[in-house]
Image 1 (cartoon, rainbow, N blue to C red):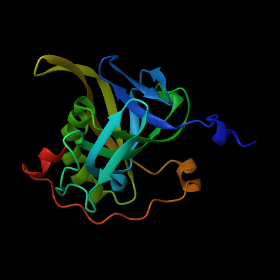
Image 2: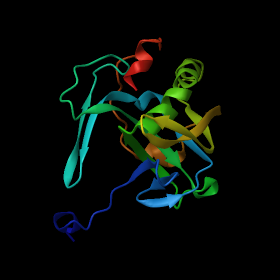
Image 3: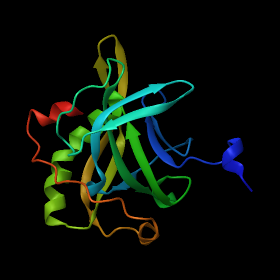
Length: 185
């Protein structure tokens, strides 16, 4: 009855595992081939993730604007609402938040965001259809990471089940992306 008090609740999220080279939906690895992204849900800022401690996210009031880094342990981060389906490789159908401060996830979002941002102006209220075409390796210092290869494939109406989810408050309008604002990811 009160499962959340004993840790019996379930988290609903999407994440990219660079070392595993796969997405996970609610902790289950899967081979996603498409997702929907709500372009109006983007948040940018910083995040600190430590084992055994809840993540600490600090978001800019206006997505894409620079804010003060809270600590040296906070890395650039983003958050965006997605929709995944079993038809395209997810273990379930549903809306999932993708929050990350990982370099691989940031690089993937950065690669598509200019096209998503521009397309959103021409497709108000629609969600971006993002095709996932495997991943590509990237050298970051001594480490090698796998970055998901994503492309904007088109636009779709919000999934019907999203209507039942309380809407996020509207965010202030993001500035047009520039070379300087690309550094926030």
